Length: 272
Image 1 (cartoon, rainbow, N blue to C red):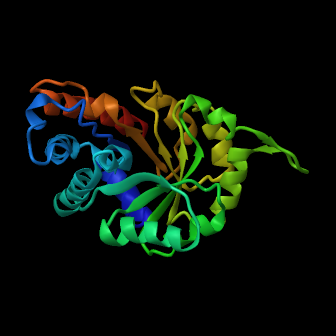
Image 2: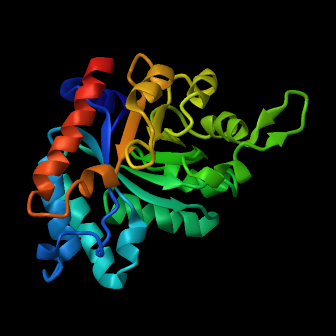
């Protein structure tokens, strides 16, 4: 998917919502727990309920890997279902991979060739050669961690670096990694829990897409993120996971998920 195709889909839907599929076998409704493929069956219902409001889905690989081979199979089934039924929706594998050489190349092959994801999240701390294999795939995206939404991100990401022009580590990542690819294949992860930082970030990478987790259960605000982070092409994918997919544990779980997605999408439509 190209930059313009993603931007056009955002304008068409009036939404820049990414629904995170952090599907925990312990939290899904009881009616699914005895299915052969419980994560997939739950995901399918959530996808169908929220697809009218979402421009992206983001399966978090940890929740599937925790179930071993069966979990991995259900992640593959989920991605295939989205691709077959909602080809216009962007699919991000939230894998946070970060390794070098042949290993990085194999991760890229896994997510881009075998699973046909549009994007994968990456940790950049081993440098350019840990990201380069992903950038070699035309039409695919590297989503690079920069300033994350978790509380202890400040342990490293906001450390001040010495030099002629002092900057924080996340700023160094943004400036350096922006040169590895282009706005057509590189995004950055910036947490919604630090919206004021988006103003600084937009001075470094004004045109890149930003994947923004932390809205919903983590307390981030759509309005605050948009105030500092929107650009002329939108340039944002705001992710919400738990507050949507676990809006209810009852039989009305899909309707409630749709309601939560619709609320966020309606806020986004007013901001575009």
